[in-house]
Image (cartoon, rainbow, N blue to C red):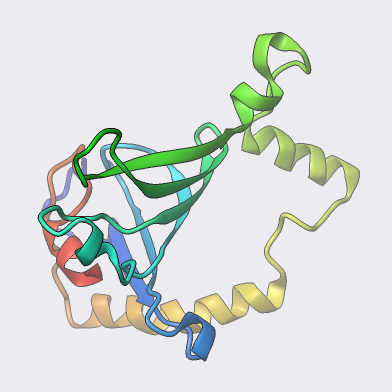
Length: 179
């Protein structure tokens, strides 16, 4: 989607973070953002560690990780993807979802009106003088302290971005990076 193919303007970023404490040991926190991707969404996913007995219970089948998903947009939802044994005699894992979808749970059949989109709620907060949804100035300064050196390095060293097709999930190298 970029007209100037000779640019080094970043259009995709992926960051893998770790929290250095016993509770979150080994749990990656992955942030991805990009332009012209296959879908527009904002969500947080917590992938739990592999279940210790899954190899014994489902010996011949790959068992995906359980995952908690908090989707902010589109269609706000909270759901837990969890593995259950398939019905019947076979020991095969089937991924199932425990789902709370705001649109179907709270706004079904026009009971409460429509769920306002994020910008509508944000503008209302501005008009009411509520600041909870906004970034504080110290947080914004810290973010710039982290990203400004990276952006300067990209510009000064003319680091070329990895090209990815419009409408894709982003560069395939990003998937390799986060695993």
